[in-house]
Image 1 (cartoon, rainbow, N blue to C red):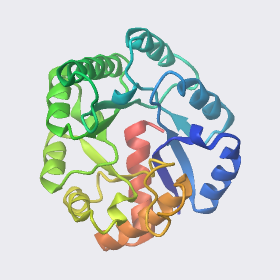
Image 2: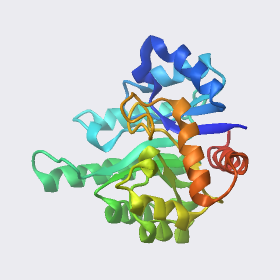
Image 3: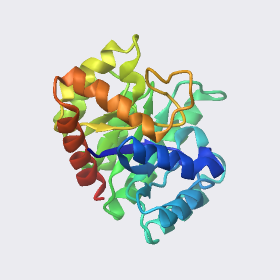
Image 4: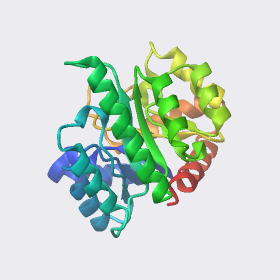
Length: 258
């Protein structure tokens, strides 16, 4: 059995990363994608991807990490698209309206512009896009449509909307990926979204070190715990863990061109 953690933040583990990767291997998690959030973590992920053949990376400016240097940040981001190893996607990028402090109108307009510019970089380099959407689903759809990005190259990570929202993505050709949230008692709408999307587009992620799944909620999340998410998903879909691992691994490899 093989599993891929399609979204994690291994820079948080520091010198514990080798042990984290070993535990992942023992849990049949054979590959991981380190997702970028700002220019500070991109070189860390590039170095780790160079060191560990089963660790891939993305580059992106997270909407809550936009500062006055964002234009220079985008210039640096684009240079990564020609490095070796090359990032497997642009992300995580998008919109986050959860806790805006300051002039809401100005901040939202800036988030949209930085999101749009990064979508255009993804188009230029023919890379898929990992989208962060928090309390901003409608606006994310609008910005993506305006940028005319191929929807089949879009994944909304840590999907936390309901079944109607996932259908709107799927109808356009996009998909959602799912975290340990699906194991939480309060997340019936997210479970229904996973069922509505089904297995053929399913990808799994930990978003570690956040959102540890049941039964690890009291612990720091890590890539090994994608095994628990996979087991829960297989039960939810009423298929074997082997079938789920085969299909989700195939999906991740195809989407990210691994």
